[in-house]
Image (tube, rainbow, N blue to C red; front, side, top):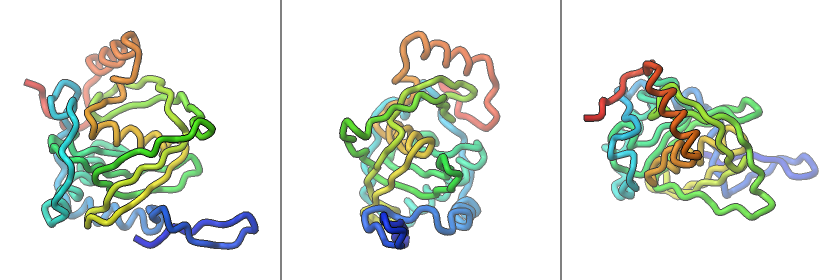
Length: 214
């Protein structure tokens, strides 16, 4: 991808070499992935693949490309804004996203082997908005998370990437990275709120295909 254009204090356009451009042609790129892919059912809480750290991606090949295409197709079917590989039963550290930030800008991309930056104390401003998850269908709960996030990893070709997000998009980056290390958002809730989220899930039918837990 091209480098992301930003502006300095004088309003002059410059290029921030650290972060990728995941905004340009976002719709076209998402559609291309989705149209090549095949939608798969979503795994839900209780499935073992969701509750352990996934394996690192080591082969950046056509098979990985097909997986990413399928993930975009699955994400669209489920009307999600982010999807981790273990949410379609694949034990690999890769997630995709198609997410608006708080300014309404659309971000689309895929990250392999993601790691979140540790934020300095002054950047840890918590946002306690509602959060949901395709693997906990129909349930929502307030969960404080930093309103700024930087995730680093690799793209589908194995090249280093860094993505930053604020607000809702920051929440998405944190949520999807959590998935690949075996954490669902409900694991970060109090016991009472977790129980309530699972009750919400039990009372509502998922609006997309899911894998039944045996």
